[in-house]
Image 1: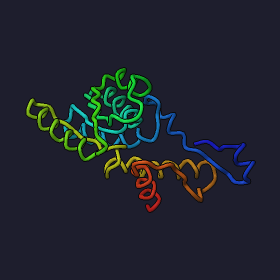
Image 2: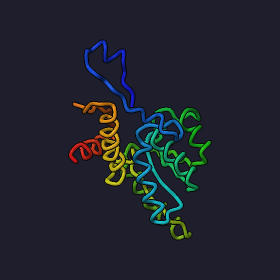
Image 3: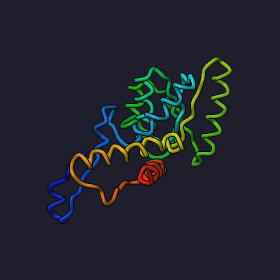
Image 4: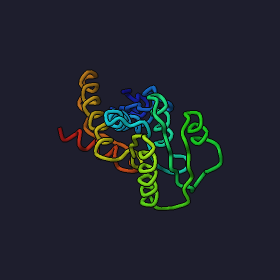
Length: 186
């Protein structure tokens, strides 16, 4: 939690930033907070394999691979075969983290979720226990990461001597925003 002194001075407002890129896992980012809850839930269910999806260069998929590797879990990434599919960027990191990457030629996440369900049945018949995490980690369990973040943010702001008037966040799959809204309602 850091005050952005130059921007604050320029606009005459106290502007602070929550640096989730410094979380200590891989390259950080907002997905790690969601994965903390999602992978804990998967472990509690005895899962050894995690499926997720996203675009070819998905930060969420890469961070899922990193966190799964840290926990000794197998990560299978079913990625949309759109965008940058050359072996660079997050695809290199996916390999470093030991993920199995499959490029799926579709524009529909429904197609990918159907494939996840089919692969889950196949692997569970072989004795594995699988968990499927949606794009961006955006479901009820993943949302808890950002509901918890609001509590953390409030504690840090109080320690710094102020109460935030607004929380601003980018949004994609909606899970971060849902968690922030949920946390702010408490």
